[in-house]
Image 1 (tube, rainbow, N blue to C red):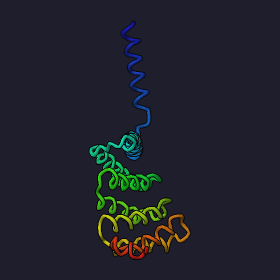
Image 2 (image 1 turned 30 degrees about the vertical axis):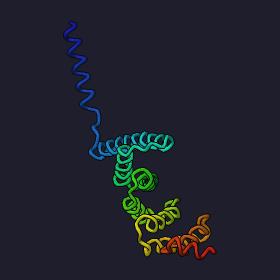
Image 3 (image 1 turned 45 degrees about the vertical axis):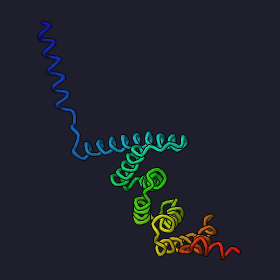
Image 4 (image 1 turned 180 degrees about the vertical axis):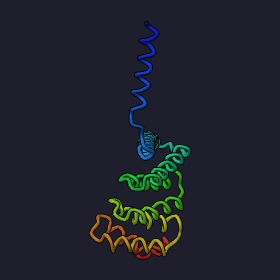
Length: 183
């Protein structure tokens, strides 16, 4: 008797599960993507806190900085339509220059950011930083001037506009030339 009840229950369960609708490939892919996005966001949040802690202590960790930049750019590449993709690229550029001291990488990230997300809310700062990177680190005065001029054309009323005008007037001048101009 117990065996009949047991087999009846097993058959009922098999029948119930076989009648349950199966997920489509699209649904499975969407769930996988959502899981990947959520996991990557959690990792980035953790890495951001480590970067902040290292900045506060004055002890940058190059390995953590590299990992953070790699994952921020991976997120932006994998989820370009997400609102925070541009934010992660912006942060990656900041870490590239401040923790890794890699001006070319920082400039490349900012250039890509300008192309991909022209409406990003921090765009004035992107142009400002590209001007500074090209002037102070990459020794490309033509690009520095171009980025400063573009900044002034696009954002003439921005709070950084006066600073950009001053920096533009100083591009390519030696310290001696600047000192002569002050006297």
